[in-house]
Image 1 (cartoon, rainbow, N blue to C red):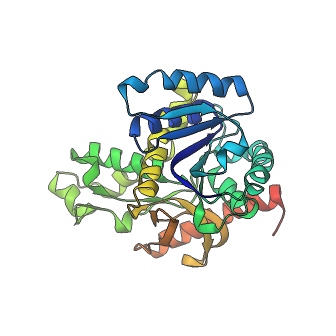
Image 2: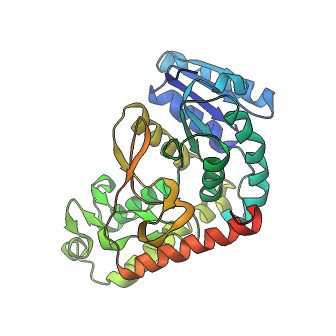
Image 3: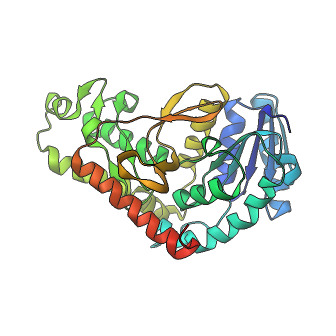
Length: 317
């Protein structure tokens, strides 16, 4: 079916799906949005609630629908699945959410969708790999939000630490969206100035300790938010909006999305996050940023962590 470039589909209307739908309504990127949920009444309620704000936004058709309504969407956003509970890791969710995706993906596959499948539900890397295998779509059109939010958290914390606009901070979190994620300090800079040098300009000299604290702060952000308010959804909703922006506007932005890896840095056969050029056709190419030997080793460990869980839950390929 031909793609409607101005249409987005949201599958799953929990906290994350609803917040993402609201963010996309406000963005003006799309003129049509279909909401799909196993609880049809929930989808209808969210469509009504968000639609009532349209007089303050851009014209848009927002409605609850089914999988047939998803077929011509330019972007299909999948947030379905159980949420992360206090004290639970993202990988703890894997069995429950793999089962959810195994019911959703065949529905997408049988409709010959020509759009892009954006996976948001956790554990996002494992669900992205599963989606690439079961959706029937080419790999460049299947990717996850990955560490886009983690990277935003890193930039925010570095901006606070250095008292500088976080948009001027250039740094990535790579690997798993989870406990084995890696802060890629080797390539971090502030508007081209190496991070250590910029820190010294701002009067910070205890680099190792500051880097450790900031990386831990990023990794533990979700746990802290979940402990305080039971769920995270605004930050990830903004991440979904940002990725959709790069796709719809064909920006060719470099974002650390989760994609199936094929040998870069010795990582093969898992989905995890590396910086990638994202545009209208999806992931155009990966960007080989500078990584130290230690960071590369950590990336391979992160991949092995994911591979181990995948083999346990999905079985070896």
